[in-house]
Image (cartoon, rainbow, N blue to C red; front, side):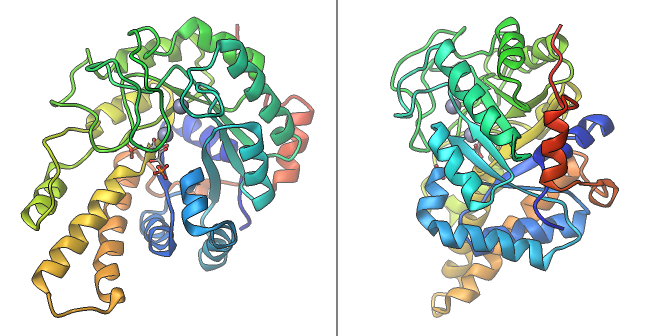
Length: 354
Ligand SMILES: O=C(CO)COP(=O)(O)O
Ligand SMILES: O=C[C@H](O)COP(=O)(O)O
Ligand SMILES: [Zn+2]
Ligand SMILES: [Zn+2]
């Protein structure tokens, strides 16, 4: 199967009440881990690459890793998504590389630091929607600034994010503004800010409603019930992985992620795409640290990459099952991007906001 439209996968997830984890990938082993997990679970796949991933691997490698995944797993519906595109140019570059979905993150300006005005966000997102939908490519946008409701600081860990301290209102997506944003941009999926942030250091304690605003998702969903919502910064930061890392020489401070039960609750309120990067990083690091500590004489990279890949696969499969993806892949009848483009052109995929 060639790459499919993310909109079609998210529509299927909405119709059947489940959520799809979108895993960040940077290299061969991570792509293999996600694909193998999906094969075992019978799950549809969203692979996503950040600008950092494209830089790390190099564009030809990213392009051909995706092609390899399609060739090796022809039965799995697969989306390749640009994560956090910081400008229409970055999104255009991803489409040129063959991605079937892009995120235009206009909550910050193109420098990745300055908090953007609402009009700027509408303008760039609308531009990306026009160019993408003509090709059947899906668009995710973002409204509200990702950051911590404990510190009121923007998220910084992955190389983008504001330096400024924000108000609670800036850190939470406003349902009425979300409705206007969807109506004006006509995007396919909306990333919302509810107190999550990227990386391992999300919460200093197991989060409660004051710092992880799941209730806000319910309010947004009530206002725009047919728009697919996206949760960023949704790694759960498993305590057992932190313990293994620290047992074998790591130094990760006490920290908490987004509990899986909270994500399962959010799926009931319209969250269809759940972004996960950090959990894969933690799983691979724990496995490598343990293997090398227990086998100090080994030096063949394949020997320590194998347990790392296996650990990544395990966490991905677990999330597929927890979010309800098990057995969904064969039920999805995906169309070519040309067919999807025609559907956008005739208005069949338009966002109707009352
Ligand atoms: O949101 C993400 C990528 O866009 C990843 O979030 P985590 O850092 O929680 O895995
Ligand atoms: O957007 C966040 C992802 O975790 C990607 O992180 P990265 O920019 O380090 O690749
Ligand atoms: Zn953002
Ligand atoms: Zn993100």
